[in-house]
Image (cartoon, rainbow, N blue to C red; front, side):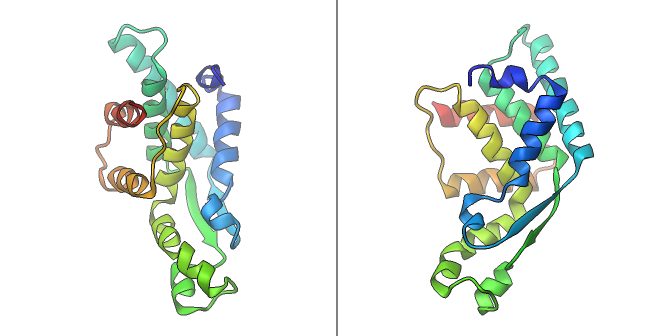
Length: 179
């Protein structure tokens, strides 16, 4: 896994890796109902360009030929978040369906998954972006600190609400959570 970020500097590998991740429904939903992500290949390519530009910027301004995994994870999160790779999602049961009982999902399961579905309906791009960037950063850590739903929700809301999110702020997220 130590060469993961090296692999992401190759456009073909980057696009495949990102598309595979963004195509899969989160585990919290996948076991209970169908969830399809409608993905833009053009936006994945845009994310690659954003990512490589940010890595180059770190290399120039920090005089580093090989920025560390925190900076790379931050650049990846920023690129994926601003690119909004998933254009839309198709959930078998919306949060409204789950609340009203108009679903094939059993009531107990519906109650359990409802908070995540409500969250996911708004923050699907940010959640997928953060999870992928976190996984990439964690691959370089001996004992990565896990994050909980509250942390994920706060990060996603920040990414969603703040149009001025920058790469440095994303990098600091990973530096702070991993230490």
